[in-house]
Length: 132
Length: 41
Image 1 (cartoon, each protein chain N blue to C red):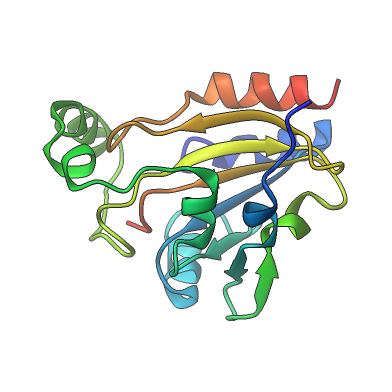
Image 2 (tube, helix red, strand yellow):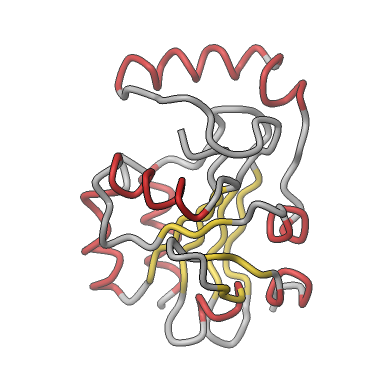
């Protein structure tokens, strides 16, 4: 999210609206928004994990905490950003999607382990492709 | 064309004020990039 922040205006210019969804409470979503300085980026809460399940995202202690890549990627992120305590379901992994107004799923990414996420370049490329 | 599953479209989220929002509302007006994060940390 921190990496995406400077590109939010660009996404809107090309016609794609970005949203962040997390498993913490609405109050924690607001705190996250303030902490990440993304007040203009809507941050939504899904404490029941309804959307995570429906999207097919994994929930696993092994993939989130014990997977070797979690530690490697976690360390890389920690060197760049100050991560706070976990607010939300600690075993839930995330993902990403781009969906068009007619409900067409243009792109989907499923995180396989903690710290596994699409690159910023990939996000921007997929966003551009979704509007062409 | 792959369509989003109805269960996902109808899943309920809450905004920062606690107001409910269906996932499908997010892409109603324009294409949406949805990022599900592991946690708010």
